Image (tube, rainbow, N blue to C red; front, side):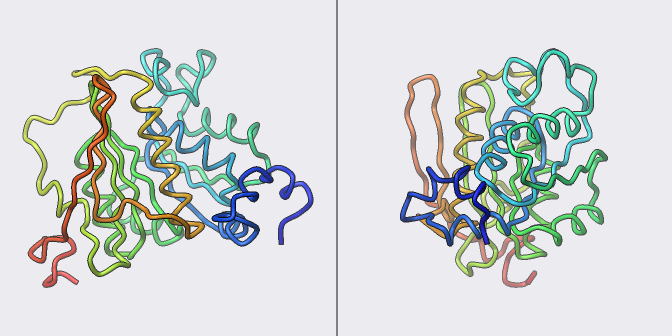
Length: 251
């Protein structure tokens, strides 16, 4: 049940008929993994904690750098040099002391990813490299856990939800295959701060929709964000039967 404090704290979203008491209870009983506590992971973690997701697993092996502060809003100047997990955890406890935080400060390999993902209900990929995204996707498909994936670089962002519990849902690999040989990072190509805030906020929204069971999540759809012209475009994405991760012959 929800306590009186929880009813008051979450009252504005409980007022929504799409959420209500039942939806808030689902959020309270949910366990979520956030992979990466940078530009995307910052708004994701902040909004999920504020919304009352009961247990947040925070995964990042990096420490806070001065160059992060332009966009990674969960950290501040006093946190430079500190573990991003520790920095984020301190901020989240101040926002909502009612939730449980689980720290993962080491890089997650295939075995540890499988173990961590088996312990949660949903995963948000907020990482900044293709290898991590591929590994997270593969583990989510194997564990049949929904994955909310976001990315942003320069002035462009994208977002989708991959839910292997749904037969028609594609996975990350269906969409991107083996990726690009010339993969760039924010440190090489640059990125505008509000763009990662926008994409991360949308990731948090999609996660709440999946967890509480309302609305139409971005399953089978890819949302493209053009920050330069402030335009949004949506593409339909189909599952690839020959996909080496989720295809018929690999189930």
